[in-house]
Length: 364
Image (tube, rainbow, N blue to C red):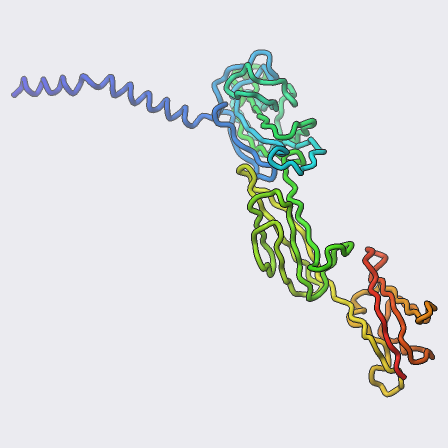
């Protein structure tokens, strides 16, 4: 019984070194899986929220000889793409700038660690092959120690760029690269799609500027090229497509409509604001005979347009009446019964719309 027991003990002890090795390998694999390196750059979107990383989770502390920045380590990587004019050929790529926004930069204060980061922006055919790195479009050897905005210029369209953030070594007694938490985002015209959100009132596409009068149908539009456009807002008749309609109600109220589109995994939004204005309703006849009924020419809602200019002409083109801040108080003066013609400029001070024209008849 004793011998049998010892044999079983030997059989149990024999695999222990192998189990320990497996355990160590598992721990190493776990560390590798959580590290952030060239194989898994964090994607940034032009309208996306800041993304957080820490250089302590970056690639091992090695340098990249001859590449700016050279005196740094603990590399972490982001990537972003400029507007894809191949996918969307109608895009007018005129502004090739973007801004990298650095926020919430916090570095470990251990005296052996550097205190700050450096940053480079470049293209590469293989982010894990340093020999394919192209010259940076941005690199500054100065150590970044606080929130900062970096302007990038001359970015090429339809291109993926990489951002390499590195921890600096610093001055003695610091002998190790910085371990810094960082929030990073990208914005600007070179990386943000303009969904071309716009609007007009149905049947009045050429009205300049766009005005929505009470009771009219609102037409909302976005660029035809953008996929899966969806809309949110008040009283929409449909919520998807490059053109939708709505029937909001509330004279004087302003409504905000938002269009959203997903492009290459990023969400982009655009908005328009629409204010419903009261429709002007000129009466086409009045009877200034002193009976207290319909004695003056009334223009419905004209009091909502205090700067409106009103001119009335005879059939021969002679000006017979003119007023600003009209208060529905014109009784026709001594004009004879006849048909007259009016021109109403709603608000020439603030904007120029097509004048409202028509006729009004005086019956005595």
